[in-house]
Image (cartoon, rainbow, N blue to C red):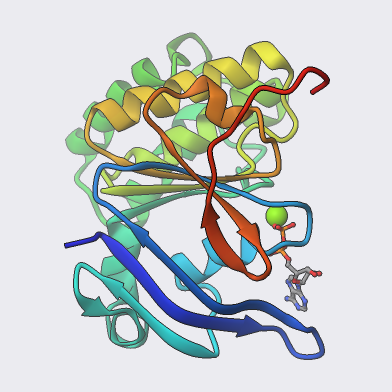
Length: 229
Ligand SMILES: Nc1ncnc2c1ncn2[C@@H]1O[C@H](COP(=O)(O)OP(=O)(O)O)[C@@H](O)[C@H]1O
Ligand SMILES: [Mg+2]
């Protein structure tokens, strides 16, 4: 049984051409998946569809054999709990500290004080930001902010992490570091989906799967090193 299955999926926005047209994709539990695509190909749209923020026009999506339309209509809050989302623009509370940002999803869902402290400490260690715990996020570097965003996305213990261009604004060193962090999360059992325009990223993750959004559909590809870029 696949974790997520999209069948004959169609999606357009008002006034646009089809973004997805009869698109199909199965994501297995425990997979590390890159979704590649040029700018405007629908990567962010796909992430938004999976987190329930955007609908789709036709077709079916199943999450562990359950119809995603029903989940989206009636159980979106439960689905969101099994999900960690890293948005392209981080969406951090800039004036709040690293610790407060990471704690936010726990505080919102009513975790007890002790559990919040324990989980936040564990995550701070995982994303290597213990030394920055009490610093307001606006004072952090881009790479550090990205690690806070990832920490916040995983603190409630999701099964699936969706990340939209998580290395978009980072230099090569920080990119490598972020990919290592996702690899660690994957090794701990999370299913990882990373949307990116950067075709080099999959080369840095052993055993990952890569699909490309092409002709409004998903196509499996084998990433190859190219001389220039
Ligand atoms: N809310 C929206 N309304 C109308 N068009 C949109 C909206 N969001 C995205 N689009 C369009 O849909 C296409 C896919 O966008 P997007 O999913 O953001 O692509 P990517 O993340 O691959 O760059 C683009 O042409 C974009 O302009
Ligand atoms: Mg995008």
